[in-house]
Length: 222
Image (cartoon, rainbow, N blue to C red; front, side, top):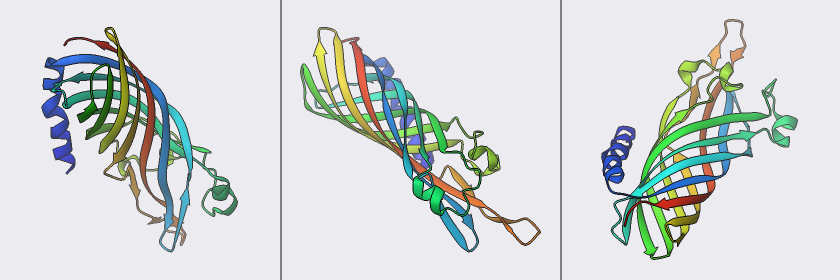
């Protein structure tokens, strides 16, 4: 599944570049959600349940426009992760010296196919497509305390989006909401014995994000 997603991204990116119609600069907020679990053989504890609010910036090239259908390619930087909640701090047995913030930041390259039910100067655009993600924050605590061989630096996922865009002359203003899911755990470290009877804590973690973007675009061709 992951290899197919990567192939899909790069198969239609060249076509989008050749048939480019608009270039969009996007900036906004990223709401990060993680499922982060410390694990011992007989005990599991979830941490970082609160949302991390970060920034997202990106560049989108829109092309292959057939009216009702179109395609785009996006390169973006996204801050994700989570915060320790009050419950984590009050009831956690394995919290230890865990920092308040879990930083899970990515550089992503993806493509989407769009359905455009509203077209013209006002455009409503719905999209879905594959995405490749590079994890940038694997050496910051608490991830830096985990063996790097258990951290997945390269991941793949699916982006789903809905956006509204208004064309003014050769400029375009828009608001877009995206949901980023990832297909694999970004941490999968099993609990290990340390030889003294106590267990070394294992960690399993997955994540996703909700992005809310404002965009400014330039129309490159008709």
